[in-house]
Image (cartoon, rainbow, N blue to C red; front, top):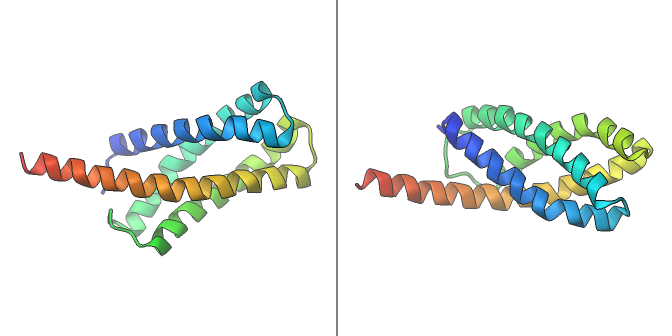
Length: 139
């Protein structure tokens, strides 16, 4: 079982990496300014961090193993993204002053990016943590 400290480190690294990649990309693709998208991304990242703590703790209880199948990783990432989609859709529409359909398309773009990013990031994070824990236990 992961500790809260590990989850906070995981969440912080995940969001920082995601923001650094997605902000300029979303600004370029949407035509909205970098500061406008950056502000929105920061708010969504904050919401995502809170949801990340809750969702991954729940998922850890359902699947209490660091060695997860691709199917389990997909379920973990999809559950997170769908929960976030429900809460961010109205925010995106309001923040960017766009319709719900346009906000939905943008949110789906974020979701697809972060779904793939989450699968890769989580796999790498767990692999590194297994190595760190193994090194600590051999000392």
